[in-house]
Image 1: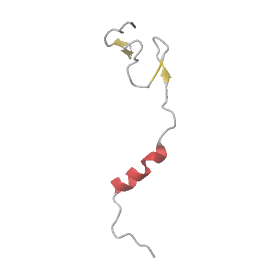
Image 2: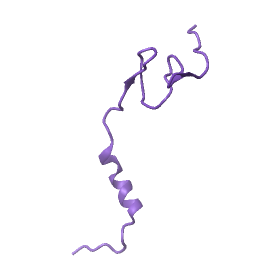
Image 3: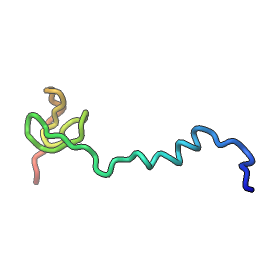
Image 4: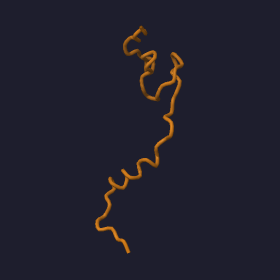
Length: 62
């Protein structure tokens, strides 16, 4: 009968199980200012705002 030689640490065990809880698609939310889809709790890349504050200027497309 196969018996493990050493105890598996919690870190090693949890690393192996980490992929079981991954979401298939990241959750996207609409930006309240411009309506573009962006990741939650991050700055909107199209209008450069987060929680009503602006972070720089949007570069014009050439």
